[in-house]
Image 1 (cartoon, rainbow over the protein chains, first blue to last red):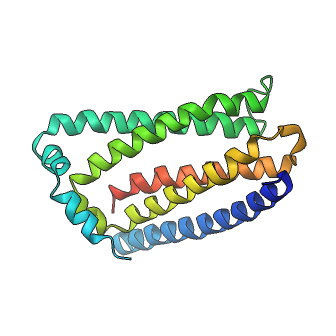
Image 2 (cartoon, rainbow over the protein chains, first blue to last red):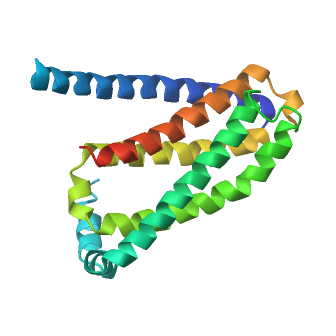
Length: 41
Length: 158
């Protein structure tokens, strides 16, 4: 595969992964906050 | 595709018998799992922080990346083998654990990224690659392996 194509794939994959990770960790932190609210009000 | 049959098989396998019956064996394998994770994390940090220009600036990034690749492979095989053994002890419990699947998904994403994109890309002369692409590759790698490690740790709390 050419250098240019690989760079494009890397950028696309990277953006997708970073967006998915941001969504995933936001969801986890939110669930912890909800749990703490339930426990401590 | 339902993979429950695999977890059922693992739960009844020789590995499960060993891991459940001999606490000492489990502890030794767990030690190798943690050592492998430390090695894997170390190689990822070294290579990616070099790509970001945070450390080892006096060493060419290509040298740092090439030196860490072999150890990354060793750590990956070590963590995979020890992980399969450890999961055999609680195979059915893991099947119903959401964070376990998050870890496996991020692990698969990491494998595709490392062997399908990162490694072929970094085989080119780094000077010919866009510095922003190099930085994005490093950040993506750090985020993926952080997610693998943190979701693995989270299994214990969920």
